[in-house]
Structures are given as structure tokens and as C-alpha cells.
Amino acid sequence: MKRIMLVCLWWLGIACASPVSAEDLFMARSNQSFPETMLALQQAIREQGYTIARVQRVDIGLTTMGYQTDKYRIVFFGKPEEVKQLTAAYPRLIPYLPQKISLYAEGEQTIVFTANPAVFKTMYSEDGLTPVLDRWERDLRAIIGAVNKLD
Image 1: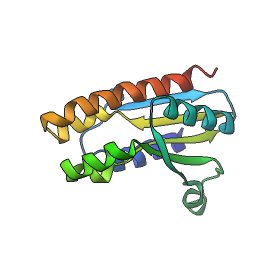
Image 2: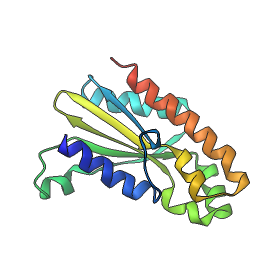
Image 3: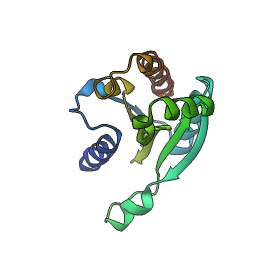
Image 4: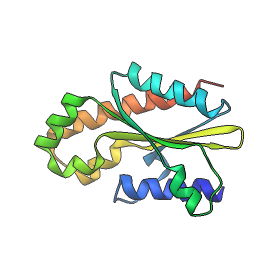
């Protein structure tokens, strides 16, 4: 439990600077193995029309801090042309692009979580960004929903 809280707080601190509530975080717990969940997550991301930019290992830093895990990743993804347009039109959004979803193994289960893009509405009031954030929220709900259906 301590590990879940540490990871969630770390990720949310990076993902948003506004106060956080339960609806600001999308989370799924899968009884499938880490590799199966990772595969399903990547497939769900692609099915929503996104490209996976990279998968970053985080476990090395955690291991040096004394945590025992060898399965912790952050999946960065987006639509390349959309990311390019958004960075040009909304440069303050650059630190949050591309989108990201974290996952890690906890015993026999795999936890998947990400910030709800709706939190950005409180940070960025530009009208043109609202439809994009709404679509991202729908897409992420579908992606996390696909992981939830694994069991």
C-alpha cells in the first residue's frame, strides 16, 4: 500500500499542479501478469488511434531507493501531428506531452494509472483546448476500461 501511495503521489506531482481528487486519477487493477497487461494496454492505446512514443523503465530508480520491483514502466503515447499542433498553439502544455500511463506489478497483480486530462481544464482555460481534453478523457476511459476487462 505504501508503494502505491508513493507512486501515485509521485506521478500526480508530475502530471498536474492543481489539487487532486479521486476523479482526477484513472486507475485499474488487473489480475493478469505484467507482460499480459502491458500488451493489452499498448493494444488499447493503438485502438484509440494513438502512437506509442516510448516505454520507459522506472524500476531502476526505485531499486536504488530500496524498493523491490522489477516491473514498473511509463508508456508515453500521442498522435504525432496533434502533439506538434498543440505544442505550437499551447506551449504551456509542453511539459504534459505526450500523454503517459504508468503501470507496475504488485505481487500477482498489475496496477495501471494515469491522470484524468480534465484536470488541465483548471490550468488552461483556452476554449480551443477543451474539446481536445474532452476527447483525451473519453479515450483514456476506454483505454483503462480495456485493462479492467482483462479479468
